Length: 601
Image (cartoon, rainbow, N blue to C red; front, top):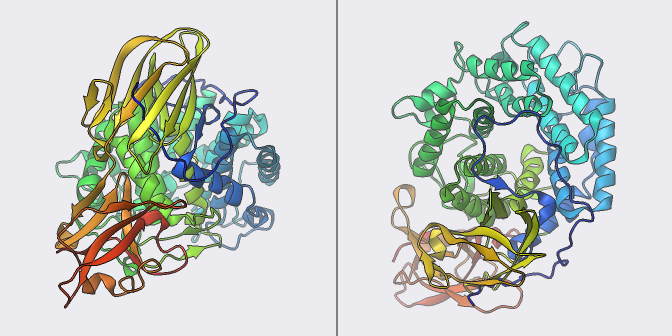
């Protein structure tokens, strides 16, 4: 039998089945454009290994223990201390709900119920649920640019909480928000006037408005969503859809190029596509994705320079560029998750994996408590324990990881992770569990074991990212995309052995990084870390050292972490010197300098 093994980097709790699966409240409105792939529900999966440790730390050391009182203070005593202070509690509710659905932690559920009730209690009779003082609300007055934006995140948080707890008060509070939005825009003012960045902050409420429609069936919310898209084309509007459908449409030429707000709108357009089936919307999204991946995407899975989409191939590495805003990384991940579900194409799962193993976890302190606002590819990391948009966004990215590790489509099960993990499905009326034991990230070996109460007939598909190719399952192999094992009847204890490539790679730089190289191991982009390389790891190291002969890195066995080695030479030294490399996500943890790109041989 063939096996894929994943090395468990840290000891984590054994996978436990929820006594009662946490299933979301079903939608009232069926999609016109159904998903091709359905992400698995959080309660049906458990991720172990390297990524599983980061997911667990996110819940235990951030979401469970964060002081939510400052997040609620602006609602209780208006105005709040920040114009956008209102966004944080909604972000926490969203992330904490999905984390609880994944872990079933009772303490987190109690905290969820308490925070949701406290937030709802501050809602005013007309539906207002924000942090602005009367007379300074909803962009109807100067300085109210982030009010609709905060209501957007309250919709996201409360609707997610409602879906997984069936708390009707959360749904009613959400409906009141939706009704207030409808009563305000455009009757009193264009929604473009209620947000910065040519209105993109306010129009990004599109996604949760569509969600409200799907959960209630109230056609007024769908019409309001359509109004938001029409508002794009008003004078001074961002014109997102038309610009992306035009020949040569580029995201850096749309509105002011603000990456976070634009990606938030793109996610909303994807949700609108699901309920309308308008093919123009999907084409626009695919055009945006292609432009970003070809021209504006860092190899670590993020975009943005000073929070904007940069010019073609403009990808500076240093801290001064304020690159890789964590909010952008998370929304990029959400965008890819939507396109993966809608199309089933593995290229979107590849981008999700890249972000999860690199930029997103590089922004997270491995302890799980703090996050970086920006995360450069060269310099030092600056973890921030304060209240910021990125500190609230980061946890929302990691809670999506379990739902994207396994997917399903009819009687086909899709495996999109090579971490040790378990996932549960129902196939032909039979409960089926897929158990994966893996030696990743040390060896390219893994075993999938099927557990079922009775014979179950299904197709099994395993994602093959480029770094893992070729991947073999018995006598079947694949170089990219999904490796499909033909439909068959599976019985309890059946196993599949997967053998995949796991080796060091040298990535040749282009454009901004011409005449430079970066190193990779599997999905990990590596970095030279000053702490492990005191001779060559200083702040100026990238300027004075060269990779030696361009040799791929090789693995160093270490019981506690992933460490690789390669060789470099100094500016005036022809001799080879060994260096140690670690995943970008683990570099610079103690404030030391690190670098992803080194000068070519």
